[in-house]
Structure formats: structure tokens, C-alpha cells
Amino acid sequence: EREGRWHSLVHHYSQLLQLHPQDSQLYHNFAGALLKINQAPRALKAFTKALTYASRSKRPAIYLELSRTHRKLQQYPQALLSLKKLSRLIAPTHWLHKARIALEIEVYRDQQKLSELIAHYQKQAKRRPSQFLPIIARLQKEIMDIDGAIKTYQLLLQHRPNHPSLYL
Image (cartoon, rainbow, N blue to C red; front, side, top):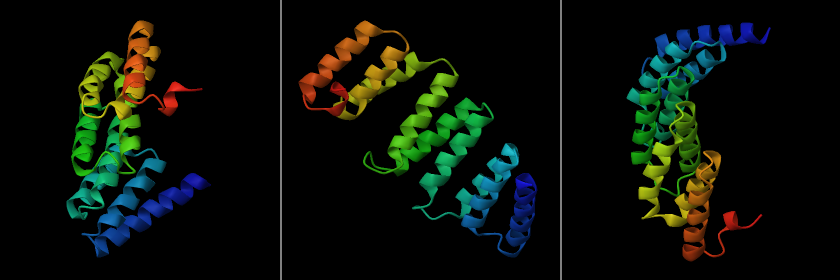
């Protein structure tokens, strides 16, 4: 029954988009409904249209959804490209930043390339150690680089002795 409702919603959004073809939020909602009925390729097109008409403040959330959808379709280079574009639009303190990093980790994990991501984050840690060192250490533990994780935690201890990730 729920799937029938989503199909109905997709139909209604299609009709609304004919009346309002430049409404970014309608395209965004349409894409979300398409995802609910497992039509990710169509959702990608709708998210892309939403980006076309979106204001600058709405683009970050759309790029995040685009990246999630590319990941769902195992289109990893496109997922990472969307995350890169998202990163350029937001500050490190933006509320979407944590979601961006979490999704980036998932994309690299899916490809079994966490070592590459660790190397990238090590460069980022030079500018923002308290943000990236805990992530690096967690990823090093995940790939069983225990010595690397210990060294990373020691670095974090030097930079921020009271960092929450140092305590259980």
C-alpha cells in the first residue's frame, strides 16, 4: 500500500512540475519520491534539475542527495565529485559537513579504498588537526593499522589533550 502512495505522489509531482517547471523544491521532492520507489536513475535527473534552479543556499543539500544517489547506483566517481562540489559550498563548521565526511567515508569504504582516504585526510589534518585526526585514527583502526592509529592518537594528544575522542 505504501508503495502505491509513493507512485501516486510521483505522479502528482510530475503534474506539478508541468505547471511549475522551474521550481527547485518540487524537483527535489520529486527526486525523493522517486528514490522511495527505487527509481534512482530518474531521481538523479530530478536532483540535477533541482540544482539548475536552486538558490545558492539550497545547493549543498541537493549535492549531498546527488552523492547519496550516485553511491546507491555504485557510481563512485560521480558521488565523490558531488561531495567535492558540496565541500566548496560549505564551511567546515556548516551542519552538512559531518554528513559530507560520513558519506565520503562510505563511498571509499564501498570501494575498499580507505587507505587513499586516510592519506587525503592526513593532508587535511595539517590545517585542521582536531577535526581530522580522530577520523584518521578510527579509519586506521578499521583497516587494522593499529600502529598508525596509536601515532595518530598521540598527535591528537599533542594538539588537543582534552579532545573527546581520546576518552571513552
